[in-house]
Amino acid sequence: MTTARNPLQILKEAKQIAQDHGCFVVEKAEPKGTRYLVYRKLFDRNECVGTRFTVQALHKLVCKVTNFH
Image 1 (cartoon, rainbow, N blue to C red):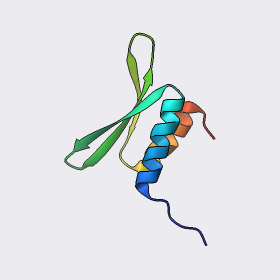
Image 2 (cartoon, helix red, strand yellow):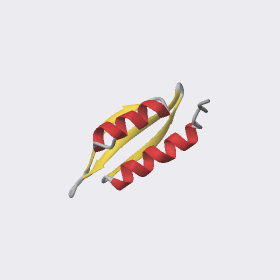
Image 3 (cartoon, rainbow, N blue to C red):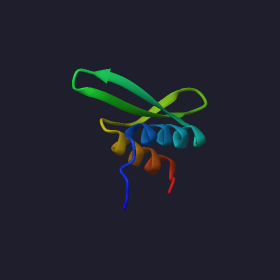
Image 4 (cartoon, rainbow, N blue to C red):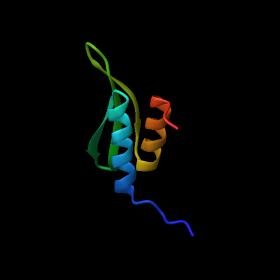
């Protein structure tokens, strides 16, 4: 029997994967919900590489951007 993962666990895992690969996640509160932005740290600036509105989609984006499997 499989158990559903807690969204907070998924968010923490996505943030850790991002941090380990030179990126970071920003949470922005908006009227229709929370928007998650993924930034890549560059030597002179930070570049936004994508945004998502759900934690599951954020995790998928972070894995894609960082080539994490």
